Length: 328
Ligand code: TXA
Ligand code: MG
Image (cartoon, rainbow, N blue to C red; front, side, top):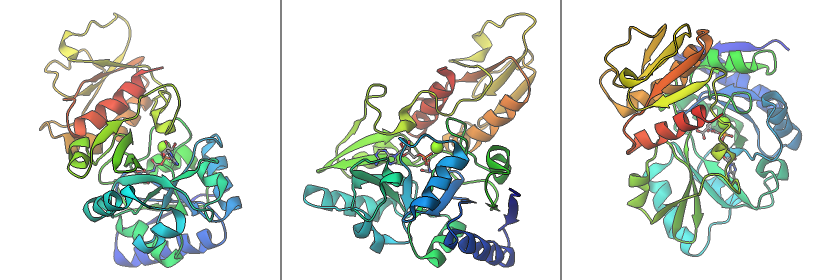
């Protein structure tokens, strides 16, 4: 299959790209679209055969459920049932964080195909704040299932070229709107009564959620509630070692190393270096993380040395991704 890449930066090219994307979605095809977090691979969430094409293109196992993106707030009660104590909490979360990088896991309604939720009785929903994604989903007029547009277990794409490297030849269209904004996948929260369970850390921090309702964290490992918790996720092909400070790290002679730097001063021992953020901004580090990892992975070194970032606020989500990348 030939993969078309349409740029959607200027208003005119954007209109053309949106029209093409909507036509393919209506025909039951999957399309890669930018969101504010990472690029997603979207298809008609209510069409089983379209949804199955997402799994096929990503080589994603059928037990890993997809996020359902909504065209607008009015769709929430069509796909999910929000009742009782959860009602107030969900209202407040939506008022604070939608559209945006927060995914809510709620009891599902029957309209959502089993293929989307992997048979779970819950459905993950969000509304994207990305202008291009919004234009496409509004014109399409129905929910879109959209996981990250990478092969299963690989690093999420933050640029159209990353999507091409992952899924080129397997999908008909990639809409290119440049780099994504946050660079990390959405925060996933299960709402159970008036309590929140963070299933995946992301751009909306625990501190922010805590202001709305009490927050706990799903125990990693054991029973997987969000396969975003699988340690095989976000893995570069090159072995990655997570260290506090690279300056103090012993390196083996004769091996080639790359450095994903937060604070190291001496970079002379490394064949390749990428800065997460020279000015120590966690927001910038999050936006740079996956692209830098991809480049270092492609650089042909033996090992990537990644430095800790402060394990607080957004840094917690970055550390979560780095730990998974290191765990192999
Ligand atoms: O930012 C994002 O969330 C991006 C953009 C494209 O929206 N999407 C994304 O999708 O990261 P994906 O499939 O790569 O990650 C979705 C995660 C998976 O780990 C999946 O297991 C979990 O959401 N998930 C989906 N439905 C769920 C459910 N009903 N209960 C628990 N976890 C669920
Ligand atoms: Mg993913």
